[in-house]
Image: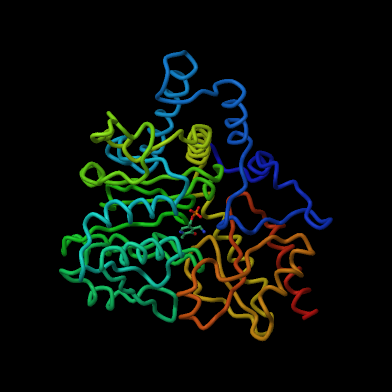
Length: 405
Ligand code: PMP
């Protein structure tokens, strides 16, 4: 493992050298999407300039090489989350598409009227709406696992609401508004006791902790490449082989079929069954490059660095009048806050003018914001490439913004 060196890391991210409104950029929006290291950008360039071909088709040298790399990338993802088999890794466009895939295949096939899908109140819309759609289609019901005022899940309510009627439990590993780390080990084990499956949204987790889907015993685990230093448009659905194998396909088209005739079609084996059409080969290779890059670092040191910066930011803003941190969680990579009496968007605009990029709004989590009685928050989200200076600039800029409003 290479030692963590912040300057050496920053040099690998061209976008961190950008200017924003005439000031050096302070990028505090990595939970929305991370910046990309040169190795990832280079992987895309090299693929299109040196290897571009369709995969699993044709019989020339380029397509064979592209197919090999594409399948090696799948194995990189397999190792990254410790899946049992490479077939258990399905390429998707992102976490959103992966969740919709599960809803429209596994859930649509298995749910019947009266069945329940337990969904936490802290979820991103991507882990709510697909369940509502399939509930509508099947007569099943989406049931909320409420959160407590401290923005953690009400586990007593979870255990009460779990029952024989529960077929699916869908929760985030780590949430995107407050970085609440849900007790997914306990949730998965409890779901299994009732014969339900657990779907884990890992979009905010994989960049910050080592995930072992076998140790978790997750039935499905999804994430997006763009939140883990890879490009947008590539993501991962992990599913246990037995589940994937029994699921019907979703999108129809090339590559997901074994034999097509007008009398009927037979489908490819997993994973091909779920990968209709020409895939995002460059995206897969770039995601593998991002994973190789991330796992070559000392990840614990990187996380300690992030936690230290977050602590420093919290310390720096704590005396601002009417500022409230929303659902502060221990050892997280982000925090949300509001300043009572001031609209979050106004603060974001004044920060933007000072070169500070962060997220203001509802973070695609309307139910959670409603439960908090808020229309939005400001969210500071950190990555391993942020610096002490970034935090100092943010703290000074927020003090200035609040004094003006
Ligand atoms: N779940 C969580 C917790 C997220 O933070 C996000 C992205 N904000 C998503 C799901 C959706 O990811 P994507 O838009 O990349 O599909």
